[in-house]
Length: 493
Image (cartoon, rainbow, N blue to C red; front, side, top):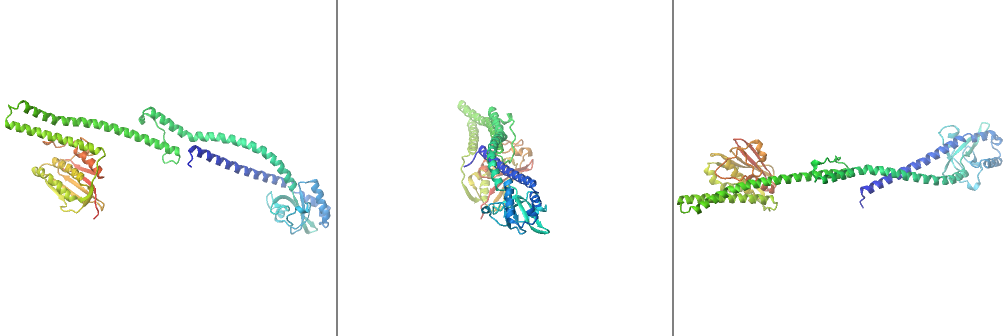
């Protein structure tokens, strides 16, 4: 189950809060216990030494253990918080003030006693508890001598079992009060922190919401609103959402701009095409009306001339309409491709053959380099032929008499080849090269011949090559000629 940002924040904060409170509580308990033991041990540090110095039995080296036991019992009655033990130099318990059935060990470790009596460690120092196999307690200790001979140690546990029991009963009642107080304080703290954290984390969301409302109020026009800046490549989900929203707004505005531009371009194209359609249509209509109105006055030669001009205008009108329909069909995105493998050189020879009359009329030399090529390409042969026809027709139109056109095939690598169509024509200005594939664009030095040209040929060529997933580049030098380069996918032999 995926949690929302709100739930994750709440859960994370709750876990962190519980962990901090738990660590703080355990640390406070340990610190309080250590402080209490240190103060207790420091307060009773000289207790065992005073008892050993002031008691005659201990001064004599403890020969009467029963009397010493009675003494311990009397001292324990006077101070029920203490437990008294006498151990020999090896740590064996010789006598004590505790009920025998409560003793769990008969020997203790003397190292803590030596550290305490010789000030070898910092307080608190813990010694073995004879009433437990592993528990440690604070103590007071003093060595007992008979002359210069060590007889043992007086070992006094400062916080005995009775003291611990009484303290725990009192502590449990106090802890209930402290727990209620701590819980109330924790809930208050938690509530305040939650408000602060939620305000901090939801501030970007509120900012994003304001941006959305402001953008909607101005019709999603980004130029009229100052959108908030978001951190790029951030792991914060809110910043990622804000950045995605910003990119979406930019994309929407860009698409709006493109739609507006396309709409303006379409209107301009429609106006230009209407003008181009009106010219041959008016001429066609004029000659037909002349033949109809002055049929008896027109000579046979004039009649034939008028019919030829009308037919030429009709053909021009048909060509323009065909190109308009072809461009509209290509832009619709519903064109199907018939991809196949074929020899590129053979296609070039077929296309060149179609224009042999035009090249002969202008004495233009056309060469295919190399003359024999086995390069196989994978493309739509019909659409590629249309592309080559447009480019070759364009090259012939802009090449003067006795000019030269070269179609060359260059191997790029094992996957691609390049087809170059180079002419020695008028060339194109460098600043006009980026626009020659635009619909209805005509270069400033375009050659005007007897035929009327629509300016749609290169636009159709560009669309066809986009469908074939091939790109076209053009290089030109004014007065020297132009080269169109097409990249085509090869078929590995």
